[in-house]
Length: 394
Image (cartoon, rainbow, N blue to C red):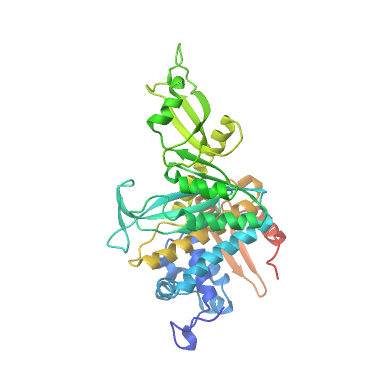
């Protein structure tokens, strides 16, 4: 990678772009939300070791340098596209190591709160706040495959084809079977048609209406006798065609009676899966894990900490946080020992990344004298797993 000579002149002020990028990503993975901590971290032994020899000798970039890198250099068109390509390349390498035959894609949107007059921020009636409205695409392993930062007042499904269709094509070219899940915001006939044209199975929540409820009217009668403490669940499958649809599609209805509730809970799922009603409902309910991954991204790597005025700068910071999140998720599922591979990213930060310890430098190597959860056994197991991972092609 070329040196950053376009922003800074003089031999003593130049830093490799790769070092600046590593510092931006790894600081977020370590739980430092933005560039405000860069000056203190510049002399941190860990951050000096992740860079080149120059970084190791003189220290990492300071706040002003990192700020200019993220808000000026990376906002250029090719560099912003390069961050998306870097994330996709990271996922492609992970797929070589661990990728099931069946790929499940989950799409969801999330609120990104803003403070002040930031470009393209707008009031969103659903979230009842002024915000950005990000769109995210995950696989079932929790990796974020694609993302898009949008103005706050757009519909939840706005721009779905830009993220979803290229990923479907990429996975099918690899010989994968693709299945898609989403909530009721993505219940759009054009989305159904696009998935069916590509032979993609799907399960999407369908907003309730009078016509749908007429199909399950017989199921809405409360069970006779003493109410059960355990929810009573009734399922039904039927063909349904809305006015905006060009063909009939299968709908699975779920009616739940809960103790202490006067009215039943009714939900509908439109699907082209051929599985049983119970299997379809069980498969769709796992979509909730995508919301958990978004929550982890917000808490662990400050995915929604987008405090710049310019919209393009906030796009850059979203991508840096997502790359940091994906690195943490890959670390968790590919490297961690089995007894701790269920830890959240926040737990990994607090127990492994920010563990107390002392780094001792010898002539040819370093000794890490760590405390707390980072034992010698765990550290050794992680190193062995990392060493066993296949290297980049070529």
